Length: 630
Image 1: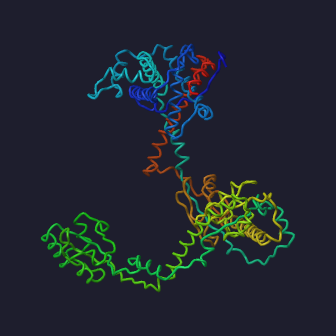
Image 2: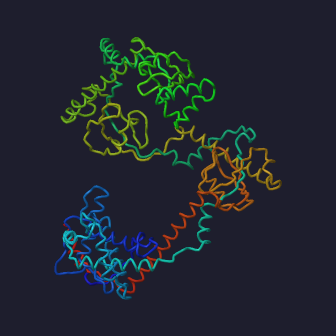
Image 3: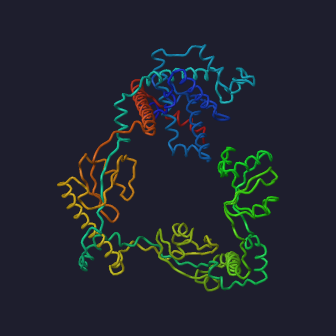
């Protein structure tokens, strides 16, 4: 837009800058931010030419190099976050260039104001800041002039340019800190917001169910049912569907064609011997001692009743989970095996020798040996091996099917010349019957379009299929007779709820006379301290919302799950400040509110500075910088 003046409104991302309690700490943080900005990329380009700036705010120019480097760093940061390369076109589509420009103009407005009021940083402070930046220090931790020069040259900046930017950034941080300092919020403000989130309600309620209604023998007329059908026609309208023809083959379809000989079954049975022949086992805990002396003392305590096994474990500073061995065989216990397997469940034996020292063993359970004969295992083995072989046969069928399709065969030809079976379905999203029940079919059916070439795809059980879109069926209302049962159910549910509400209204009238829920003859519940985050078992989701919209003494009727609820707000209770969670919430809320207010103050301040100083942008200069990214 050339030299045309533009007013730009942005919200600067300065939360971390002004959250520090002292301006000195803020400045240090900003210095590190500047270092990241200036040194964040490798091989930074110098965006120089005849044009030196892309615009200005007041007397503060925004150089082409400053804009170019900031845009480059923003793009690289986005690439690092997403793992994907970002072109200039991508960056512009996502608004990265506008965000960078807005941030630079906000910074320029602050710099312009700092210059106007004479706020600056002395040479001594600047030198100390440069010397304290780790990237400019040598291996001895001291400032290294060569490292400083190398780092600055690497990003295409002169020392004077870097130091000027550092001086401006520090002055900017001081001004920002001054603007948002002293932002403590009055306690009543925080308490009011806290009350909204942590205030409590004491609510009495009862449930009016169908069992409290008198029996009714009512049969809706056809006219009533058809009227409801027309009223709720959207519920009975079939969605848009795709009429799909498919050919498919699954392992289950050819199981009867697969033969498994007995020799293979026996070899598989023998290979799984440890699965079919499980030896006797014990559930055991083991407590080990360092030497026989300590173990004998422990045995004495057990024998004289001074301690039980749990007490011995606790004396060692252990928990039962620390000494649990799980289920073990006699061979797992080496020398201790025979004694442990001779013990009864619950018995403690020992001390017995182990490789780790003398130990006590407690038997917690006896697991008998399990032996499954070949004859018992054969049906499952045969089924499993047959399915595996059928899966391989189906997989081997995929390539011939693909060749047939590539040669111009139709799905009908495929079904005629292979084991694949032809079928069709009027498919809609969410369908889960037949082939639509297989994982992956829905995604393929969703993407299927008219004219798509059939290709062989995989099902999650190892099956294969190919499909063709025959036509798209528009949403169509169902025939009344086809959905009559559903209409009857809806009618009966509505009538029941209407009767429950009428009954609840009668009970509310009684409650108004007696004020005692006990007179209603129903089971009464009381929620002593509901909060907005609470949930009530057996009550609908809007129970809590309704309770917090009521006044003390007010009675409401709420539809529940096949019932109607009557609730009365008994009392409004303030937040429980003695609850640690509430106290922590208050602290966090206060910090959040202070941060929000500080951001609003800073935003208004920055907008005012830009408005008073005036913003000028040179679109041609901005475009010239963008050319370097092509």
